[in-house]
Image 1 (cartoon, rainbow, N blue to C red):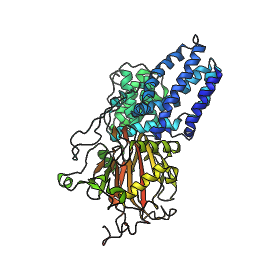
Image 2: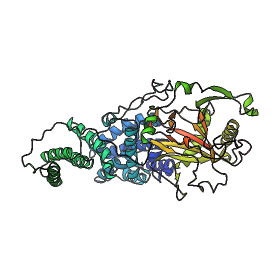
Image 3: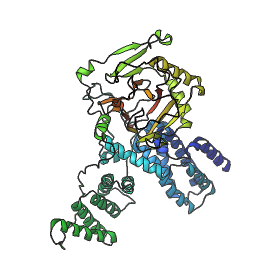
Image 4: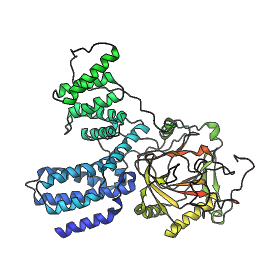
Length: 556
């Protein structure tokens, strides 16, 4: 028995050594291993139950529930985690609920199980992961205008993956949601607490309201109604709705008359409201009912991103500025790379995605075998994607970029060298001065908010270390289909480009003069359903002098 437990533990450690740095939630690809991790934990747990079955009926019930879940999830880990609620609950279970189970088991020690779970916990998601996964669900809620009640019931909308009509007013192909999941009262409460801890009272109200709705509907929960009302009333007050905060606090006092903070808050809110109305506080309060509270709709506070509304609308497929006139300027063709010898007999299929700035899509440029090889090589190297601080020039992580990335060299494998050569053949740009192939996998609600790929005049030293000049062009490979969300959008001119596995898109970031084309500010929309894998190559100015010579004007 002990030997078997050691083998399980060694296998776990071998598979998960790269989880030690946390931030698991930022990559669905790496999170798939957590599915098998949880499966192994359930197996270990069931062995413990068989040893002390007479004493541990509660734990046996827990294991049975998770056994059903892991049988489903391990049948298609990536598909299971494609549903963001499943991903959030996986992180939440491993970070919070298994710890509660550990405390329960310690009451009746069993060396095998305790040593297993205690040692394995070092590889589990941590509090930051759980918070990150919760904030990702809120990001999806905002971007795609999802109602908390529908999210809690697992009713994610089946969004179009790509509009058939470029005007964006017809449905495209519908891929659906393979795995569903629900949020309990406890889950909704924890979502609200996460927002509350970040002083994000807008989302705290929405999720505490949902927890209250579900508990009013009779759902059993270890969270008390008074706890929910306590958070909800203060969050509503922070949103500036004093009258509603007073109403909720009265209800809290009716539910729990001994609640000290509620009594103080009630008197405080009454004085504030009386002062606002220029009246003396009325000591006779109206009766409090147990009817569900309708908090109403509050405006989401503005943030640091000026084009937030435009960006999120494009992510939903709204506001795409593709007119019939513009559409007539878009064509498809066979592209041989200006008679490149490697493309003459097998030219690449090329489609115009946008006319100005010119964005093209190349079809069937990566095979499934190549994609799987790239993912296989990248997965052990994945680390939280970084951005360059415009002031210090130092690479750092940022909340507006949620993904993990790895860098692959041509010397790593002949296949990578072939892919690099193919990109050079297609674009006609020298790959010798380009950056390494970057591979990225987006996690729960993974995104990269609007940004420029090139360095602006206020950050002249951004690529000084490379000595190859600015980023002249971007070549982006889509290595997976995405069931919903995950588009590449350009807020400046209203374009949305949807992922299609095996295709690539290409655009120039600089005019021929070397001046930046500020229209190319773009974003990777949050992934609503699915796992998004991409790889990209940034070409630099040096080495392109004769391949892309200067034009006659600054904006050629």
